Image 1 (cartoon, rainbow, N blue to C red):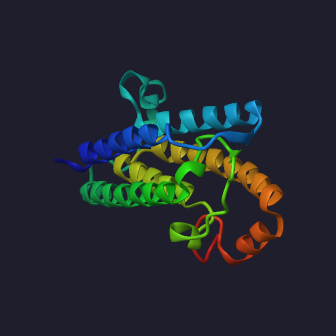
Image 2 (cartoon, rainbow, N blue to C red):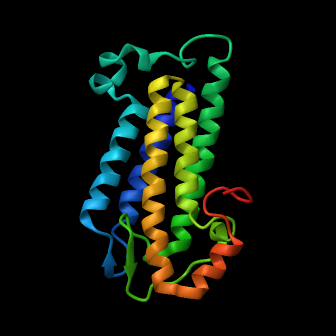
Length: 196
């Protein structure tokens, strides 16, 4: 199997597992505003359309410059494909580990659940938002594997969407857990261990 097919297969499996796990969560006490969530989702959708370049929706068809890059030819194309596949596998695996640690407190939206816990173990001991870390790493892997300017633009949109979502989430967690979250945030980096 080539890197492109394997990368797509990993994302498909991840989406199926992610959606199946979404049925198992605690009741919601509080949720982010609908307008903010909608904007985040639109930005993320646009980013992933650019990253995946789905068939007839491929942005390269409308704007040929978005198809420029390193992905389909050149001496490094294969290396970028395999590196992208490895990064995708590692990122998606990391996000699934983080999702498992959250357990029933997870939600696709920024929410506080009934009996919500402040999770600080597993990948949460390394970054405060390991699901975003993993999904962003996998998205970077996808951009490397695709190797186009459109994929890089998609990656930028995905990063922006997740950064906006993280800010909302952190505000809610600070409000809910007060000093405990402040202490945790002072020790553990937001997204990239030891950096950011």
